[in-house]
Length: 484
Image 1 (tube, helix red, strand yellow):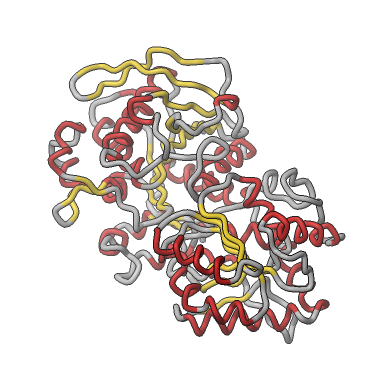
Image 2 (cartoon, one colour):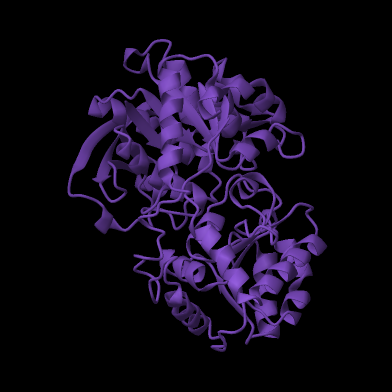
């Protein structure tokens, strides 16, 4: 099969969150299944040009706003599968990937350019797999094109939802010059007086996927449907939940080049050196007998930072170190700064995105990893943590509930600690429970080993995506049978 994967970001090129991890790992996982998978993304300013090959595809004609705009496309094998990077500096030569008033125009152009590239390559995909709202434009355009364009007539579409809350809304007046001004495409975008690229993708794609089974159920409810639960219920027979995998070539404590010492389930001794290194990096006392609690996330309320703020004094009273890495809302960045100022020998912070090495060093050096999310479509850090013998403390929502098993002291089973009610008291109870078992080294090591034994590799997820693609190409009626 030929699968074109479209994404606004992907590792190792550009990243703001878990979408990049998934988009970078999936093509490689599909290639291992014998699929001809190719990744297409914008050439963002922050992409390291040394990752690009010398081969450039010149003069790809993009029909845009009434004229043809020829662009260049760079190629790369750095992701482990062929990748094509759309060079459109007038849209993507910017300091960050998102956050501009014309984001809808930027990614509508990307979608148009991706389809133009496929035609230039004369590479007809069986399936185009778009990710999140920036690719909603491609889903809608392809559905319209199949009515008259022989090149794409038999191409099916999959649209993956990584976070339903980000809907790509913009002024519907812009639909005309973006090329979506005629029915039915215009109506596909309309949502409560605005235009939404996410809604267009949800309506237009042949199949929908999201990144965990639990999240696929949650987004069909008014509580977590972000105003689109009605549409997802209507399309439930075309919706599947496939839990993301972990790229163990990148996230493996036995071979990780970023950490102070390698270690394994058979020999955990290197983790102690990683703890020492982490404390040094954050200028904290090298007291290896005190537990290290860590969090890596965007600084937004979704990630549970309001709960952490409520518990800041209680966490300090436990005597634990607390290390945080992330960027986002000013109110949470200011909170972390004031918390660090209050307890500089106990709280370490890095505000911003420091790149992959520091994230690996935190995962390897921490004892516990906090993910008290209001909602979490899948989450990857809890799976990274388990691989590194770092015990996750999570709220039982979305993929966190799917991937973390609450520790059962009677049977010695479980990989972490879960709470259900979104409440500071519930989180504090689980932190205290984890600290209690931390004080019992033999039990704590059993929890670590339970987590390290989990297989969350991309191989299982890749097989499920292949099954989904095969059902689409074979025009099966019930998409969700693929993951039953």
